[in-house]
Length: 223
Image (cartoon, rainbow, N blue to C red; front, side, top):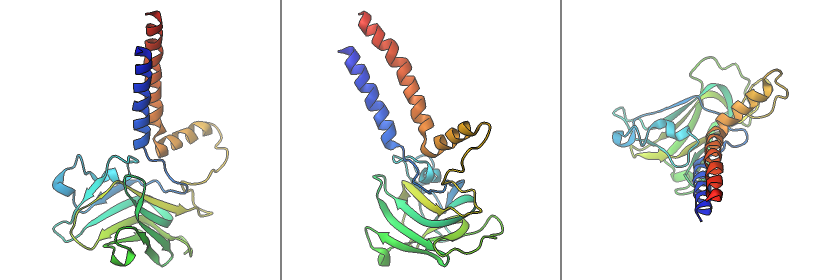
């Protein structure tokens, strides 16, 4: 009985951790940093802006308007990327609002609650960190910054914001496999996958669980 209870409890613990972890989508761009106009309720612990890109369904950034009448979430991509799509995600994995981007800009594609025509949110892609020497592409928008703005001063919570990019021929983007990386390539791939999907945390928990479960099982058998 003790053995069965211990194993079941630990499996439930592991499943709970995995359920809260979001895996990156195919072609998703990994952000470098994020900022917003102001923090909802001034609660930097519960609503800190990093929660919008932390790969955790259980957290969310809380944004509100500031004294300059700005209400925005701004995501830094680190370098110029070609953005195809942006998705404002709910914690259940549903996209609340989806934008599709072309060389002329980003337009609302779907907004499940109010519809695109009534949505108070807009998304733009721009270049703030340096020159943009990329040639225009019809099905995406080049830039290093994604900005989501709300036209009202109402607060809003973002469990996750997903940015999908297009892989350019001259771009070392996040998606795709570039083949053999030479010495240390396998370790480099493991490190990248670990960062993107948070398998580091899950693997660490699994190791701790295994280290605890095996001795506990042996102990119960001896009893």
